[in-house]
Image (cartoon, rainbow, N blue to C red):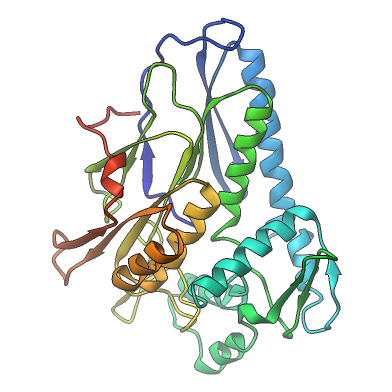
Amino acid sequence: MSQALLSIALTAALAGLSANGAPLQRYAFSEMLMGMRFRIVVYAPDEQSANRGVTAAFQRILDLNAVCSDYDADSELNRLCATAGTGRPVAISQDLFRILTASQQLAKASDGAFDPTVGPLTRLWRRSRKNRRLPDAAVLSQARQAVGWQGLSLDQERQTATLKLPKMQLDLGGIAVGFAIDEALQVLKEHGIESALIDGSGDIGVSGPPPGEPGWRISVAPLDADGTPSRHLVLHHAAVTTSGDAFQFVEIEGVRYSHIVDPATGLGLTTRSSVTIIAPTCLMADSHATAVCVMGSERGLAWLKKNAPQADALFVAAKGQDPEAVAVTETPGFARYEMTPQCPSP
């Protein structure tokens, strides 16, 4: 999944009206779900309406975690992975089929830069980060033999999935949070809440803007975790995600490695960089940020322009050892989401 490289800057609540003429008020909630903190901010006519909608939205996220988690041994995802190498098609839920279909399509389009079958490598890399030792070459080679998006077969008519390779392990960390945020926003809409923001530890989706405002104000954090944001966005009916290593990295034998694994090597990325994607959906922003981060700025932004023209991106990469020296590349449309003057503090 993408990391928390974004901070939210919400404007003060201004007068607004609900469909029945009642003034809209701002309500904020947070819960620990999917192993991270989710924050939901809504504008609703009263506390009861806000509680009802947000409770349902949190429940939707909780239900999707039971589907997509690779940490929960009893999740639907892990039950599917237990059949790897048997050649047996497994009937799966509509939710899991939808997210696997989106993952497979992106894996094919990105030539494997995003790969939902990378689980054996991410599990190995988690241990390496914890132990601060590179994985044994033989163990890494064995893990790579269980990875490859072509080994996942989906049957649209029967809604089944088949994991062809032994020991395959799916990892939806780069897409599941975005999918959950989109679904939770839809739940809020069904409960009559048209103005909402959901932040899943830096993956952010928004619906309509706060009353009297052009959009939700969101600050993009700099390359380093202790830096001050210098880019600020105004968004509505959109999503934004940043992938990078500012918060999660490890140094091994003098080399800085990201928590983001390159499926081609099985190791963490070594380029200190961050990618911010603005897209119509959080699923797209979340997953495409991972793909572009793995590809690098030149290849990644060219790929994004061709394959997802409705998305925009900001790519920031360190230049040499100077912490102040960075290379910034962005798509031409990114600037249209920026605001001035600088947004206020949350």
